[in-house]
Image 1 (spheres, rainbow, N blue to C red):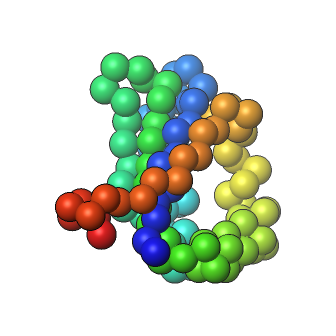
Image 2: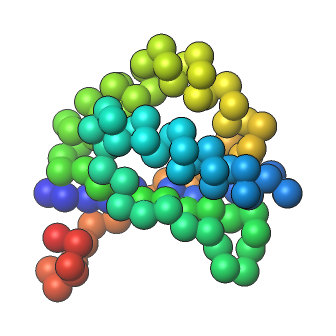
Length: 107
């Protein structure tokens, strides 16, 4: 069954533009190259420290394999991962799994 991750990040004050650039130029292209399906990237219209993004998975097995391909990779551990704490509060990451309803176009 298809499901999505809705991920909410708390960006450090004054770092939103830098974070969006890092996501769009580095993180998203890297994850897509590993097979992730990124379905959206969003700034909060009212809270300049809130950032959201969504990823789609066809199954839990696929999610586990893609997590391993991304987060266990040498490139993530040495190049991408170390830069993240400079931009976001990792302790405040919220990940919500959401499942499309029968009438959703995201089925």
